[in-house]
Image (cartoon, rainbow over all chains, first blue to last red; front, side, top):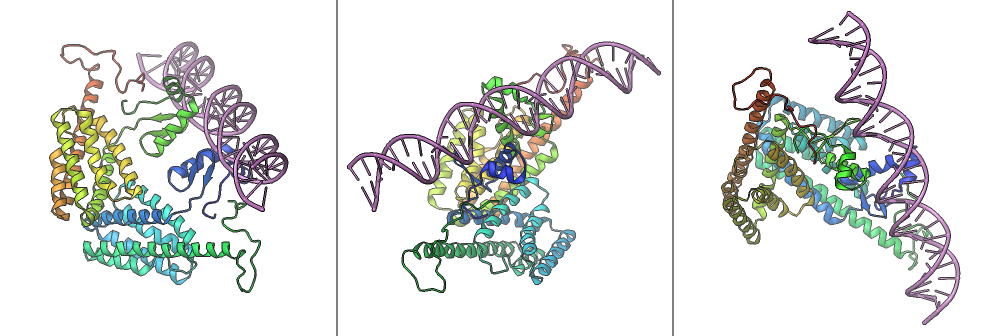
Length: 225
Length: 225
DNA sequence: GACGGGCATACTGTGCACATTATCGACGCT
DNA sequence: AGCGTCGATAATGTGCACAGTATGCCCGTC
């Protein structure tokens, strides 16, 4: 699912074997959740996050988790702490097992675990939407290098929580999200550089192992699903 | 718009002079924003907020604004402070003029003003959804007595912000939302008491000025729009 | 008189077809 | 050769009609 690729309704309907109206409903819902973009009379597209959007999404993460942590230190109990420890154990296991998919999922669920303990469906729902967007950005721009969310950073936040040190927990959390944001920003410039390279290559013949002339540049317009 | 009343699609379509499909789109969007409730094969209804929902919504308000205020004291500048002062002036004017509609709108916009200054569409969007829900609760349960959000409480939060006193700003904000929540909780028990009274009246003849036997009890099923 | 089953009615859910509009290739012009 | 215009095509937006289902009323029975 390359960013910028179009999602034709009729195509999706035939692929999934459902009616086009059914597809429309789902697309509209995903657009409402800001997970897809819709241009009237043009179609729906998988969003191509701008650096500005990345900035505002992770800013939202920081502000939001600041509030969550502040409230959490006031009502943290033993049961909650043990749940956090259990989760950190799972994260470490997935990280050591090099199970990237599980690792990505679990590192998101760490933050979900924190907000869910506040027992407010509104807060939980908002975090899940934020996570869905940032996960999309990660899958789009994060280089293949592993360790997306460092388990150690999560563990450090948990330690500060146990110590009831609000300022430290907030500071660590803010740094944590800033780290992810910075890696994404780096990923996006690398991607832009590749784009420019690919675009210039057919024009100025560069000495390289294999010529890539004739290859499609940009998002493959035939990319489906 | 009484809580619990049904919103038939065809009825709304004829009232507003648009097609039923158009109405369906709008209803689905409002359901997605949690401003209406949908029961499959039954219809869409204006929600009847439970005390539990009121609790979680205002809990979300408190946690969220805690994060906003913490970030805001770090980047508050003169332009922002003067905007806040101007807004407080408007609020006072509306309150003194007994313009309840403007007063309600402006007291919500105070919190919008704060979050908008953080320049994160995600945060702004979330607060607007929260406000839409709490406004609905207020219009449903708040007794006719005025001063829904006291302007003084907003002013006190602003003062703490100017003084860069995070703890105090957070404490005042949390109390502020708790005040609203408590008034709503009181409103809901009064409403329940009225309901019980109305339901019992036809059974046990109470000495009163006018008998209400034969009147519809509960939400008027013919209530439209 | 109360309770349970059956029927009429109204409403929601869904697929379909038509109208509208953007896209893209070809053609002609400058 | 480049650019603008025009037409064909495909995809979106929207109204409509039919099917499925819950609701409320009425009647029969206990």
